[in-house]
Image (cartoon, rainbow, N blue to C red; front, side, top):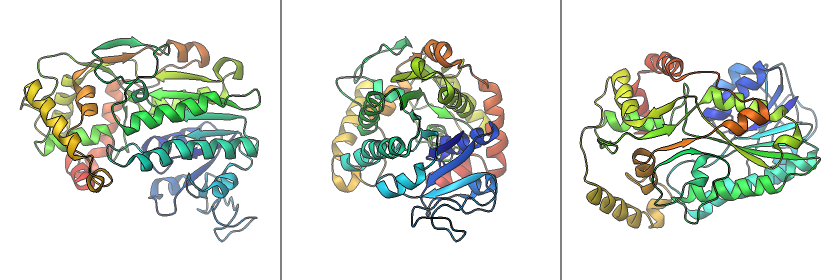
Length: 372
């Protein structure tokens, strides 16, 4: 098949492009020209591809130029309908991985990136005759403020009445758009991988945890509690996306699926393991819950200021506290039943690959340089 992948200059999208190539698909990626395309260019032929500017066939970087084998580049932005139409031309499947995932930004920034961008991309895909749209969502879209431990959550879980943050709210809104767009000639579905991790992750949740431990800025939030979580290695998320793209439309159309690793991860034990692997101190400073909650409330009140919200990551949020203090595991039986999902890599092998990638770069010091 010919597939279009968004977010391919990022972590999961880059792995998805690589996986699709290995599976024998023709891969086109939608990227900004200003993005770091170093890794993607190692997967491509002559390096030029589909541009968001101009039309027709050209070897000079405008229009469709698919020179060589490998990745074909579509230069454009999710808010540019014309660029999206050109990028979607001739593709069979769209994998939409791009999103605003940081914990700072205004409502307009999140809504534009996560909801408007998804709608425009779907319109372009449908208009170009693509038959399938695979949306990479998140279980965060289902997180209810104030909920306690939850085990074996399945797809019957409703959307919450209150969201933890703008990321969760806009991912839920985008997912609803995607699922409601399902038609006999245009199959749409959503995948919800939790806590995607693995090699080549420069700025996700795991590098941020390591960076904060290295700087002594991560308190011991789990404390004596055993907090269990479902995480998802990037290879497992890619396997799910590729399988879902070829599953019978009548089985997967208009549905959302949780995707996760086989293991349920003890968050406290994972933090100690990461600290040992990266040579940093594990969290040891505990904050009494009333003090912690007061700090979170103060930070979130302060971050209502547009000058802070638009540019800077808050040091502590209700969302981060919930992820590190409440157990949440997900049932992947529906994905197993409907498109044959099974994890292709375990946590131990994933950690080995992570260290094989990170150590030559400098390990924790590399993450600190990247994240500040």
